[in-house]
Image 1 (cartoon, one colour):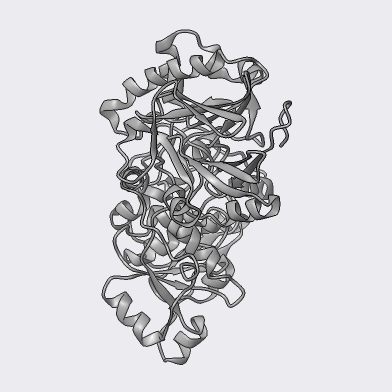
Image 2 (cartoon, rainbow, N blue to C red):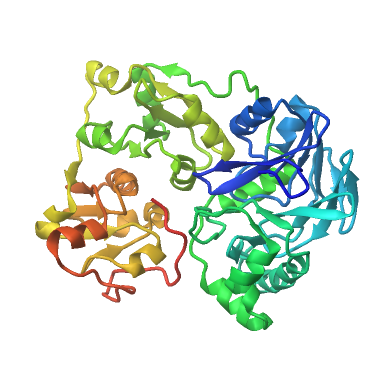
Length: 476
């Protein structure tokens, strides 16, 4: 994107995590990158395309949803890391306080304290001379909303929500044409609303952002907190890893998978390793290693891997030959899944050739659900309450691992919006000892279209059918 003052700012979007990084052309062949992830492949590709050398790496806050790439850039590109002095980071960086400025060689970056999403959150105002160009708002003001204030625990949530109220009003006081460049966008579990727009202006947000229309602090707090849903368990540990600084990686070898013979994979699984099958759902359903988790390789792969795979145990991958190992390993590293020890050499064919058993999971279309005893809907609460099958039971996928053992035995058809999350849920149920499982390929809307029957809205109050009380961003 080219700003009105011809400053070139390039957004690098991660559709899976719902985030944006920004590469700023400083006009002398060098660049500033804001909120770069540990998976730097797209950032480096854009920098190469623009013939830019990364000289500065700025982080708006201690990210909970991904590991920062700033430490890696400091090692590989000798970039200067810019971040809040209040963040307590344990690695070399230039700590900034409210109002401090950084001369970027013609452009200027000014730190603005905007707590709320986190304690030490900074927004960075980019100026060309005396003219504000845009502001990198991180997890403060985002398009149509504000990022969630509950990541530091329930005892801090109200305080941080009130800080977010003040921070949004500080940003809204900037000149109307000032560009707004948030990190979190649609699809982020840091609570961006759905929508295609990932950047905005101060004037546009004043006209359209419902939170900026709420002038009373308590009503703002109630409105913001009422919009929050669940978030991945790994959010509770990545902030501290970012404070310490993620371990730097050997980028030449980090995206590779060691080939492990079937006997070794069998031994690792017996010792507690998690076997993750990244093949498309139909292939997993047709035949898979008993107990393997289906997490199909797609943009949302990293989120669900980080959410349902144990944080401290080894992971082994099963993939198709045409699936690139780098597209598995790098997204995993970005969410702190560092212990992928290798892949099943030769895939499922090699497993079967070694004489080891495989199993299958039934696949159903929504129209085939009439005879199923139990339909388990594993979507987020906001998705479920907006429309679900009559008598469907609800447990969010992120909570299923802890509750699978307590679910009644018997035939279960698992449903989400399309089938990928349902397949992951079926794997979790299989690991917990459930049998006679089916994956529904399609969602409640497909069921309503095929049967002509209406969906039910709101939470199901039936005994034994817990549904979370508040919604979150819909995730496919």
